[in-house]
Length: 429
Image (tube, rainbow, N blue to C red; front, side):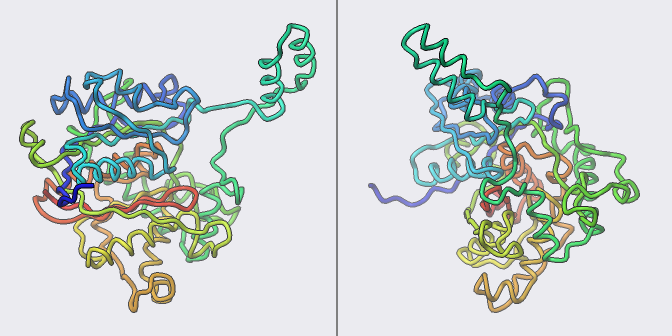
């Protein structure tokens, strides 16, 4: 393989559709229709009709069998050149982040000059399958060589319908992310009030960003929505305080407001080299500096330090070490708000001397961050969280924030199910 210097990778723009609470505005939409809309909006905004891009990487977590080539099918519904190749990736809630890393790495290595990272998800169109008994019998019917054999197999069909319904619970622990995070949050002593403050700030920041027009060139209207319909402009501490716990039992601290709701949506991010951007009259917003993935032993590990959503703590630590940076060396922090408890557990771990010494090999704790720099245009608690689309939303958002500021650096941290994560450093172009 030819040795060459890594090329700087720039974020040139982004587009997403408004996110919608599941079983609502997008009830009749699919992963493909939403992803097509996000991509088409990107194509229209940046004049890419007919363009032959290096690659489009996309993905979704909740997929029907027909979505085995989701990104390719979505691309074929856009005006991009059909010579543009696609690839589908999946890493739970980090799917969108990993598509950004995938495209960025290919650009950095000189394999492509441009690409799109994208993702979608809907739980309004779930892949409900047949359970093993019914599935086995149907397969046997299909394999039968004669009508008599088919009739014999059909006579043995189970009397009751046997469906396999998707569940967010981890296969090995049987715990949903919320139930698992309730255990982790309790271990860190995360209280209800501080979680509600995270939720309050998320909604207020998102509403303020919409009101000042921040999302005008990041969001395309779709299916009757112009804004994320999970956003609550009338949110207040008093209303939050009235909600009952939904995880952790009667004494739990996690509610429907400080936990993300099931959401449908799609997002896309355009990346490229400086030369490609110049050739297409596009001004880079930000540069992808580095990225890191990490996993934790959520099956047998201590739920406080190895909880299913704690992997970003370790990913960020490695990223900082490799780049010679301190946790405080950032102008913006985009931490995916799967649950307010998860955000606060992450921050608590970075501030804990014993944790940082014993598990991060740090002589001193990483320390605290300036909370005023956290999710300044809203986070997943307000926008909602379509699993495959959140990474693209975050990267496009923080890139525009850096472009507005004209300088600076941002830290992206995304937790994912099955004890995984992705983290990134993004700098102003």
